Amino acid sequence: MSDLAWVPQSCTLPTEERPLRVAEWDELFAERLTSLSRPRPLHLRLDLAGGEGVEDRVRDLVERESGCCSFFTFTLTTTPGQDLIRLDISVDQAYEPVLDALAARTAAAGESR
Image (cartoon, rainbow, N blue to C red; front, side, top):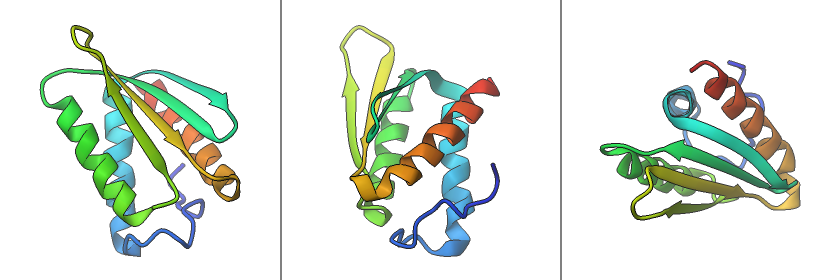
């Protein structure tokens, strides 16, 4: 899924930087995704294996993504004593197709493990 046509016009990340950002997310998911679920149509839940520096890496990506794609709502949850990071991603109805594309891309990256 190398085509970035699914990225909405409201994304303010410069076009030339988008493939790099997508590659960062793909790498994270390929390395760390343990489960993916869709509790509701506008909500994607990702569980990621933790480890040294992983939480900081996820927080950094979430912060940068929030800066250019304000239509995403990210919630990061960690549980002390567990090596798991939960990333919940929500959107408004207008961005459901974007969340669908992100879910498909995430699943594909996770399958490459």
